[in-house]
Length: 383
Image 1 (cartoon, rainbow, N blue to C red):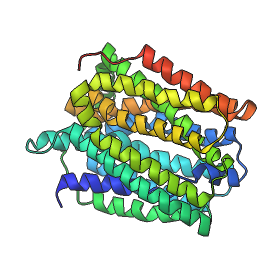
Image 2: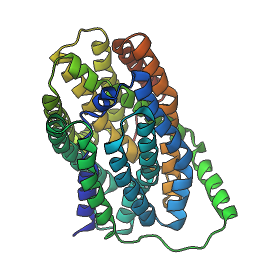
Image 3: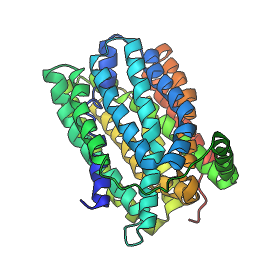
């Protein structure tokens, strides 16, 4: 199979997340409060924060493919643990294992794709491949969420993770066929420390730091908002089966939007498109904060996901263009570390507002955050 098609298949498989439409409902089923739910994700972010730099250095110096194999296997194991978890600490343990795998996968997979395309001059551009990967990822997630709602309705919430373990294992097997594009080198601990220091120097550029802060704080806000979609739909009296279908529609729309976001950016300008999408992502949250729970509110959540997913491949491409190949995994991991730090700070605060005030207050806080990020860290008008 053509390696680029492998990338698309990987994006499809890794997003067979049957648990997506019911994960928060699963945690609530086992009597976790909003604060406890947000702490599950916060502790996961702390683990991610600790591991991001070491995982990136290991990928750059010992091989991206080996790191990806390790990562995909751990993610498979985490889904098995999630399937049998039934209390706060069991979910914490499963999340930690997942974050171990995700730390070795996140920046490394992006870097592997970018470097593979650079080595193969006749291949598509990174922006085109990344955009199509996002399309197949959302398409896969759309199909999985429709199935996940059915699984949860017929068998119970926990089974969605056990079913998700099957494509996760297939993704690991697929990665075994990926070519090794890294040169084998022997390095010492001192060289690792020096390499990491030099990689951090690459983010001293003001533009790079601005992009990093934009991505980190913005994504943390949207991750927090995403946690309220399922409880919102339950309060709107939508059955669990239909929650899966609605999620599938949401992600299907997002997939189509991502597919054409590159074309829009070519006409309007990449940076300009990103700035507009940043503002558009925040507006539905303000409307949600000041209206009662209705089906119309679900459509507003759709817009948040839509605009954020259109924005993601564009701003990732802008960031990657600033980084040199030999340090790409490490610097991308620094970005992931920054995103984890953003979630560590923001998620507990949002959980507190949701429990002690209301879900609507929490959504208002998130909307204000996204607007402040858009104003404080805009991308330059020229690409």
